[in-house]
Image 1 (cartoon, rainbow, N blue to C red):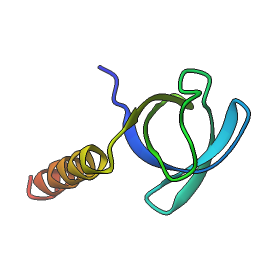
Image 2 (cartoon, rainbow, N blue to C red; image 1 turned 90 degrees about the horizontal axis):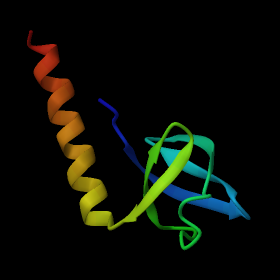
Image 3 (cartoon, rainbow, N blue to C red; image 1 turned 180 degrees about the vertical axis):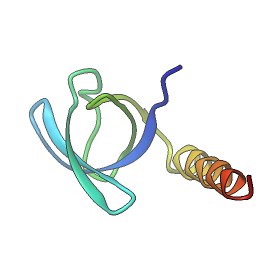
Length: 75
């Protein structure tokens, strides 16, 4: 199973750019999402932005990840 993580676009320069993942900046490729722009949210997997998504969808997904993490803390 593969998981794509929501990340906010910080900067783009051609097919390369930087996203923010929970306070950590990471350089990724925007080969598959040429329409992405600074301030957008993308789903990132293995160093590539796969889709541009809404901020609401990004926040909902991040909340689900947080709930999942909390459930493992009680085990």
